Length: 394
Ligand SMILES: Nc1nc2c(c(=O)[nH]1)N[C@H]1C(S)=C(S)[C@@H](COP(=O)(O)OP(=O)(O)OC[C@H]3O[C@@H](n4cnc5c(N)ncnc54)[C@H](O)[C@@H]3O)O[C@H]1N2
Ligand code: MOO
Image (cartoon, rainbow, N blue to C red):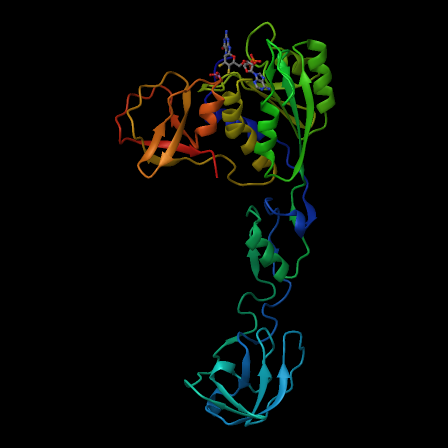
């Protein structure tokens, strides 16, 4: 198969995903998801003209008083009594204005003598310290659009609008397979020839912000039967992700095992560095992604393919990472025929390439906070040139 360009591979991968049904999720389970349908206000907010301050509800035209204080309105009061001319009501923040009152004299500006209230400062314009009914939103108003991300502020708005659940895509099930005879679990003794398996833990951390379950099917030896069995354990997940065994060596069995279980390959090998041997296809309702084993390759391909696929399955209308454009602080040499994703760090001066660009250099990856994107066959550029950069850390 010819190497395919990154952008084409991303589009093809997203097109493999089947649309998922919408569910109503309790509001406490909605953070980090995307709305699947519009959200309208089920009520007026505020529900009535409310006081914004603690003080006295008065008729502004009667300033500076005196008023006779005849009642009290507090948050929770449903039907405050109407005021006659010359009357006022004690009122607290969030309480409904009594009919007849149109302003609030804050208590710091009031002189009180028994029930007799007088203003001590500043004329009161009508509407002073009053939040009119529906000022925030009116019943029926369109508040949030489909495709918008649900964060803390959107949750507050939806709750105030009367919602206890929101329409979203269901939690995602992602199964992980780590292939390689050499792998031992994190923290286990590492005999000669062995390597701690870091990819599954890294991918689980990358997936952590998204609601769902990560199913780690464990370490899979480089053996056809074992790889097939691991894929069967992963069956039914929305996304199945393997790492390692994606390339062309005798022990790279992921692609043949995927085809042996009945998976349909869509593409293999991308014109990118690192990450060339990426495999993508479908198996039943699952999307399969075979990432390369090198930790940096696995990270970069997860960032460019797995996370956009996850966002797409949650209904994000713009799931692909968006570059920002920064000056490079050093000259960059010409790139080869593959698109390059160079590990780099950002500062006030721009973006600086890290010394090690080896796709096995986990230390360089851990100090990087962005990737400089070099298009295929890009020429040398001098320090100061503006280059597309993908942030990889919050
Ligand atoms: N003759 C060729 N050789 C290679 C090619 C090629 O085109 N022709 N491609 C190279 C590229 S590019 C990459 S990337 C690697 C990745 O290939 P694989 O996906 O088959 O990965 P492995 O060979 O299984 O492992 C590579 C490397 O990563 C380590 N590894 C594997 N799994 C994990 C894990 N879970 N945690 C941490 N490290 C892991 C593994 O021990 C190897 O050192 O192939 C090139 N070869
Ligand atoms: O594409 Mo590989 O990931 O360069 O090392």
